[in-house]
Image 1 (cartoon, rainbow, N blue to C red):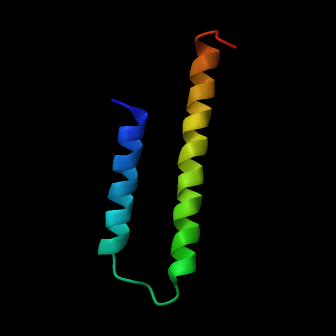
Image 2 (cartoon, helix red, strand yellow):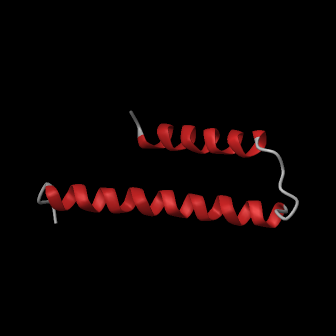
Length: 61
């Protein structure tokens, strides 16, 4: 399974969950954008750490 395919499926699932959930009055468009950007950075950081761990484990670094 490719990482881009699974990542895009993850974002699609999270976006659909956000659309299904009832809107909270205190959360506007800026908060939603900030949340999605933070989520994307977190997922990319997690994948980067996994890649670093895998390379160290295989002795490539």
